[in-house]
Length: 463
Image 1 (cartoon, rainbow, N blue to C red):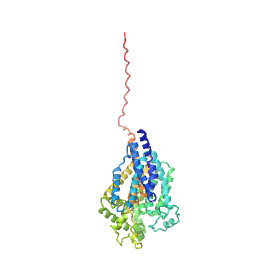
Image 2: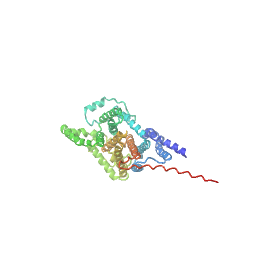
Image 3: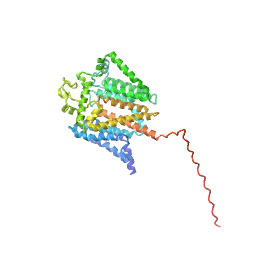
Image 4: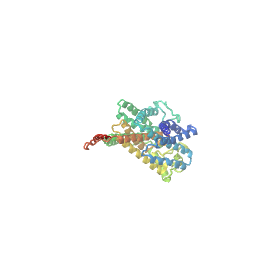
């Protein structure tokens, strides 16, 4: 029995690699693979939980997130049942299951400081690669800013990388959102990494990622990054609070100099071809999503059914900014999510799913704040600051977009959730196991002197 436990524990230690390198690619590219491969990938997820229970006596390391994640998992069959077309719900099922699997694989696989440092180090090349892919790939630019410099730079950059799943282009909003979420880690590391030689490398990654983010012209991602960096600065020093009124005055001065109309056109696209990028178009979409949540509060409209339900039950008016009169009616409605993470969760999982999601992000934000406080003097302190910035970017950018509704971006987001939780568990355990200092006013206990050896008993005389 003991040998079986050792084998099960050893196999459970491979979970992170198997999930990341085996299960994730299969579920992400499920439309390219046979059904049996998908079944094997799905079966591998609970198999590792069973191995961990057999080898280590627990299904997983305990976090504060079990209840909201359990509710999100319970809402999966409800969402499939509510979906009019279950085939459209399957990709969303894979998205949630893969996200939870990656989350717990990281939580259970990063239990030592050495592994956390390894993953932290791998984020540097990952950030650079992501920036290069965005810079050297075709992107579906909508020319939101109408700046000749950006347009000229985009035309001059070669299209070296063309994703096989969509050779035409990569989504500017998804690429911008992902860049904005990882750039806070690069910013914190370029300023606070313990090894001085690593700071220039992180600075290069931050600069390359920032240039790529600007070229995506994703205004929501830029706003989220600005908020994330501001929160990181305030967490570092309260003096950064003085920059808030200064930034407000600078903004008012820019509006006065450029003119309100020019600034409005710069920030909000208003042409028919960019209707989904305009504030008016987003408000129209958000109002329809709120109507769906009110009408289907307990079950949601069904996983993957937003565009179908929008077309059939909540049709857009002919004068809606989301309607392009130059396109056939059948090509106008192609909004797969309501461009808001909170409304997207309410639409897919109803009010129970929305409450569980809100509890999840609030708990993660609490962990991030506690990690910053607990990481003083630790090598991973820049990572703690960066993950706090990531969460702020995700929550702010989520007000105007929902890139997590797609499985590739959702997998990255859940990985960062898992990294944040693993870091918090490590820092909390380190503090709990650290010896408490002795108070200077507390008298030191004097060790008791060893008892004196007993005198030997006299030997009785037989005579």
